[in-house]
Length: 126
Figure 1 (cartoon, helix red, strand yellow):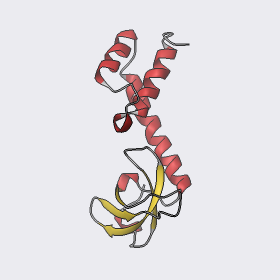
Figure 2 (cartoon, rainbow, N blue to C red):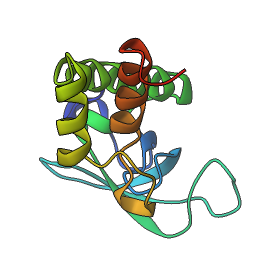
Figure 3 (cartoon, rainbow, N blue to C red):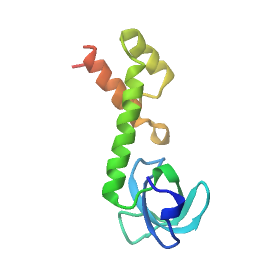
């Protein structure tokens, strides 16, 4: 993660797109208290087309830092979700309360992963 003091206009910033889950980068065009505005580099498959934004807790200096940071955040979220499913009853309730299906921009990969892992641990799935 980065903070406001580490970023300048023109910097290359890596982040995870919320709607795709893809780790990508853009060039900083504006800086605010909430995060940055970015322009994509359309000729590079690692970037995006157009403009986007990134918040401070989802920005990284390098692609490797972004991959590691996103993985750590996802692992913490999966652990939190799995704690909600200590038994079969919790497993069923979780599926009613959280999106455990793939449905475009509403997909919650961490919920799906947590649900699947816990179902295997409880012996419901092979």
